[in-house]
Length: 505
Image (cartoon, rainbow, N blue to C red; front, side, top):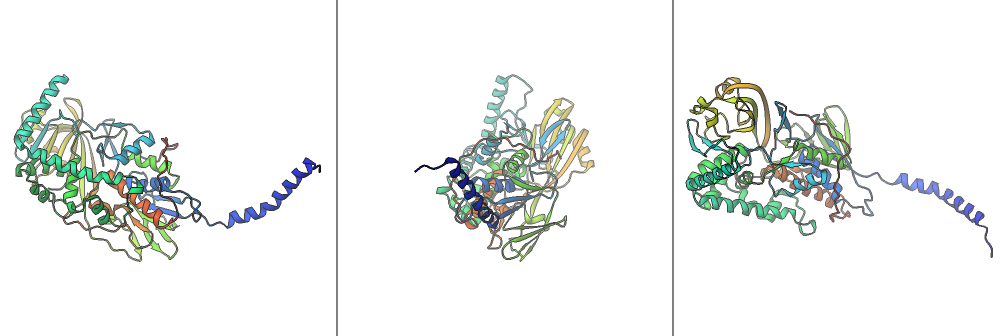
């Protein structure tokens, strides 16, 4: 039987035209995708957004990915990652260096096409000069030789290594083994998602990796337990914990081990500023970004959360994530949430372009002052460390000073013989560590209110924030998107099309 092609084609058109209202009705009646609201645009908040996108796969009950909103009270992203400009040069003002085994940060840099670089010489260079200052004298100084010849620098490095070993002995090897063992345990967090549990509490997360016991006693007790020499603990270990956490060897053991790991070799940072990791992750994660908008209340209303901002805006979200320390923000929760009381350790970063006063250190010339001046634990010492960031010439050097209290002009004028430029930044940088540590839960209300920074009581770094954020993202997907697959997808390298607002401090 012969069929006219034209009539068949007309019938198909008529058929689909009849179906169109039904299709439209089905599409408009489909429930909109849920919204995840994230408070904080630092490495924690941006990582949550990244991993939500990375791990989400459609399921029959949730075919579409969530909408993601990020709220930042400042008008720049990055949180405690920021830069400062001194004399036309850009330096890290907050979180500064990353470990060679910080694999999330390395992956971010590769995905975003960011250029990595070693930190300034004073932070990771065998040829740097080190001095340990007790407030009156240098109790230890490495050799300083002003030479540009690599062979001479290498010889000086070997001599200094020998002098350090002669002073502290085989305890250095024990300390290295302690740090290496801790890092190896931490590497368990990079195992494939199929082999790694999803954790609802920090305690569970630490116990699974074999790290929990390190949070139950002080670093000093841990090091005494492995028979480190008292001199090494009093001097070199103290210098490192004061530089990295602004605290003494009485910090909890895990934070102390992380601090010691941050003093090793192979450290790196992102050229142009570590904040670019947060910026790039936000740009690439299809996020609605609300800058300069502080969230002042989060209320659970049964089916969703209502977030109210200082701009008098209200937002409805099925899932809410707090990715900023709750210690010094004024977010009101309804119902109220309960977390262990915690204080932040403030670090005052003072950047000075000028010249140190050698007389302050009992020396005759600036050249005799070590490039890195670390200090012993003494409440009367006005700073924890002074380091050289860049030397333009013998009379023009940029320094970074860490202190527990603000550095007054009078104090700076006694330490420096000349100051061309001074920048001060007060960071609520990390928790004040105290063993045994108590941890806030990742889930604050038993529903879908999450807290990334609960992990900071274990250790506070860019990488630990990313590790905690990855767990929180998986926790959200497993609890709210229960049928969504958590299988890892193949990631492609990318470059963000737009740049999130940022400026130098």
